[in-house]
Image (cartoon, rainbow over all chains, first blue to last red; front, side, top):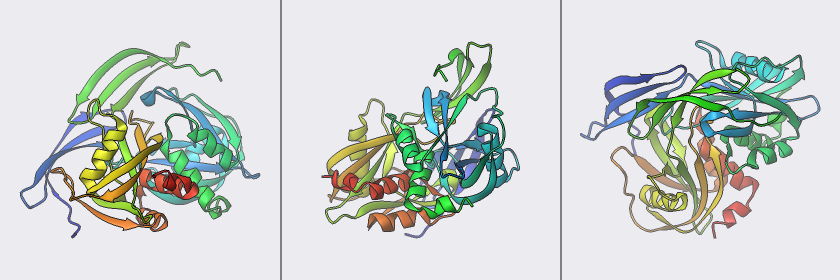
Length: 184
Length: 184
């Protein structure tokens, strides 16, 4: 199959919110085949597997209103306009956990929901050192705990439904222990 | 930390699209702390790791307009109103690949984007048997190939950014080979 991209023939923004907007596009495949696609436009985000000197992973327990419950997750956050993903990762790690990244390395990037969202989530592994206290935003309520990667994965997966990015990064780290040592 | 949920004090729907809608809610934590949250309301979805008799995984190559490119993914699709996730998984597998699920088992569920989307993605493993031809929707362009789980994971992860659910399910299967044999 030849990999062709369709042409965008119409475009409008029916919703513009605080962080997200919706774009509605009419697209044409050239063969006469046309469709209308609604996409969430997302600024991009980062997730950080923070590893302490003794090999423990920084985990967060956090309320997520979109799914009406508390989840175990690795630290993560949304890119500010123009922000470099690695800087964002260090900033979010410090703000959410009080741990500073003494070294940080990108190990990949995923599309969490390519069916409807433009979000790219950049994945980082960081060596994390206790620095100070959390500095949370008004709408964040996060508690921090430390676990081995295997324990952390068990915690993540214990719910009826669990956080996809955290499970993936822990599986990646357990499958390729060099990812953990890359943290420096 | 006591795990309390905030109270929803206001709620409106500023956008209602074909599949998605946006809900804007004012929430209160009781302590006087208040915030406004915008959530994508999603009907839920399924992803299927389809395994053939000789242990190969069914992979799709598909154009995703939201990220403007082609991705390698496992079969997946959105729940119809009132549809049972396992029925949806069998239906999507057959429609997208032409393979029938001779047995199917749920192995978990994830929140792909809990920061802003209510989506729950149900994860299934199925024994897949060639049945007929794909029956694609107007806006789908999907080609199918078969690979060992290890090869499939390499394909998924080869892009600069890749599909999160497919990488996770392949990692889960490689970490717990009983997942593959559970397909029957």
